[in-house]
Image (cartoon, rainbow, N blue to C red; front, side, top):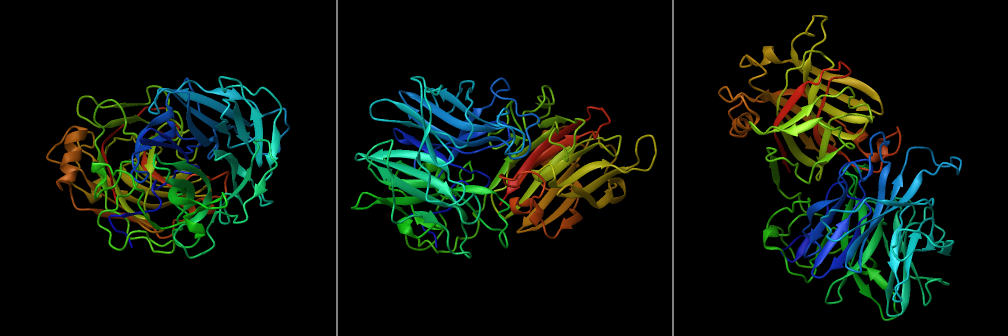
Length: 581
């Protein structure tokens, strides 16, 4: 159970894999993988290692990197965040399209380096190191020499003084324990020992953290007799797939490990993707260390002895981390303790100002002039593009992480489609071949305008699309006199693997702008909710069930608009998006 002296794992909830952490002064900074999504490489900040806030992205400009056309789960892999000589450094892999095992003349895995004075940015344009591999990390030794570590195993490459070029041949200093997929190499030096860490076993069930040490950077390395230092061996535990970690020490020399994990959502289906968890590290008398005392990932754990941010008390962090207030039980939760019910939280975005909230991400770099904030009435305007949800080239798909198995999401939408191919609405999405959409569109009947307005519920399972339901709007809600002057509210209710969809009029006494319609909807001025349909079993929205292409992310929920190839840049105005757990 949870108490004010404890916290719940994961601390970063929803799709946030491959964490890398660094302490600078009294602050901790953390970066995670973002793959094809833009802006890329989210950066989080915390004072207590539990409550995290998003402060920016390392890649947020088109001139830094264009991810358009990048296949699902390609793009940015496994960032490594560090701080040296007054600057933040970030190494990562850019995974390009193409199959593994292609001719070596075509490099599909490039390493990239960026720097910044502040973690919030701006970050430099990436400099590329064209050496094949994944999961690069930076190690700076006591003599100032800099090295890049790269998989497979721990390969060591000397770097130039500015840390942007490899200056010599690489060598493998530790190949790992013999388990499959030795990756995620990290190096830590403490008390004259070099500790090499690896993630092994593949980033699924059976993932683990192993370590070896040496008195010399170049080796030889002896393996820890307690390996694996972290691995989930209980198939019924709430946290699975644990591995790919990094250690960080506090100013008081208290040590912690951040690592990725996955929460099964009914069976072995981690719908939310891989998330970031935190567990304590203890150094042993023989110079090794343990993670959570060797008990595996913890669901509930004692809080670090660090100042807790005042804003965190009793709430949910902006990044999805959960506060401890409201729980009960003794501090220092056992590793097999069941997690409490999901924390209650609500986020409402009416899209004020000119910039999006940092929780949002585009499927890839958005096209120029394809979206804007509605300066007059408030809200977000998406201009429908030719590509739809079943294409990696979709122009307007804006998403945020699902953070819990149970939640509700709603949006207020004004949209006047003229063709059955034109649609805008709400979507749950893990990739171009697996999604569920609830949209406002037109019925196909051969008339010049494509028939009456409809609410359409569609699912796509590994590329096979099925229309589940299609309801005529005007027949269901006579309050609709003019869809250009009012709108609809769409809602999804998620309970485990079941997803229900509803709609209602967002009519608020003739509200003619996005903000007014959104306020009316929030205040209950719309009509009663009407059921659209349901997806009783949405396991196809988990990476384990994606059969088309790669799937290293998690399910996201958000907004989209497409003309389906008509060429008309139809305007969809979203007055509000709300997410409630």
